[in-house]
Length: 369
Ligand SMILES: Cc1ncc(C[n+]2csc(CCOP(=O)(O)OP(=O)(O)O)c2C)c(N)n1
Image (cartoon, rainbow, N blue to C red; front, side, top):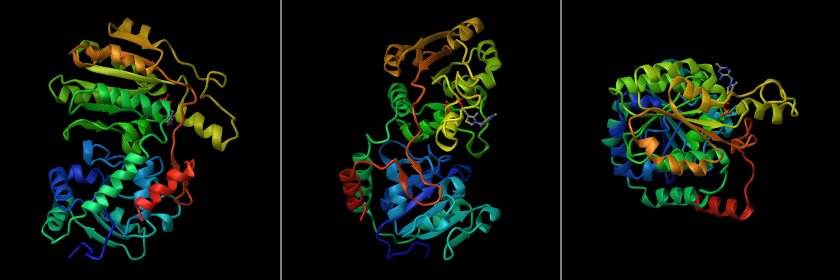
């Protein structure tokens, strides 16, 4: 018996290992059979979508997801390595009220301990889920409803312009889209706010490698793999400048890649670190400190790609047709320079910052009690 029947608030945390083991169907089956809430890591953010999606955990994870981890009494992590980005610096604060079960195919990942009494299974994610499916596990409908009520309650907190922009893009996409995302704030906003229609869509990210400029080559590869399929490429202005020459491949191969530039005119992720951790001593990240952005519309047009610059993501509505036809395009979306990345889990505790309205916080905590 792997599952602890005494558990009242169990959760599943799934990572990319579930995809590698081709166990996504088993995951959905398990989630449906038991009603145990499913959370993901950033790498597994597209493993579960639509009404099943609560969010991803970790430093820049969704507030509701991290609150649920803080309150759960059983965490079953499958194919999720639970690295620093998920667990933080002070392991004692990770899922402080829970027993931890870890299933991973990678011996090295399991050799790192997170909790002294954690239970580890060196096993393929599909086999592990199959074993769980064979166990008599009660349904957790009421607990799942409470988790989703918290998600609902907090739906409008932490909504920076970057999040709202991703929500707008998601609204305009067809079911099961393939999306390639770059690195920086644009990645975190995407992971936080891309709720996809359908269960087969993909969000391709560089994960732990964090190599800026990956989105456009990812999009090219994904489009070719799908016999010139449509791919949505979400990138920051800095990331696009890393591999901008690949626009020629898009044109030469006539790939229906839709490039959406979240253009805040700064190397946002790093300028934010310089703002908060280095007392606003910006270096090579903002216009004044030595970073500038070209006119992407004109560059795309020079390559022969249809392009437009919009002052606000609200204008994306006017380009619905561009996003659904089979021709490449670039939409340069102007974002506020100071669109921030929130919430953030304190590296040395499990406190989620910034604090929200006390009444809202209390209500969410009561739901999770
Ligand atoms: C090749 C490479 N160089 C530097 C970094 C460090 N880095 C991470 S995010 C980032 C800024 C990204 O800026 P931008 O592409 O404009 O995206 P934003 O954060 O503004 O969304 C930098 C420099 C990196 N991850 N990869």
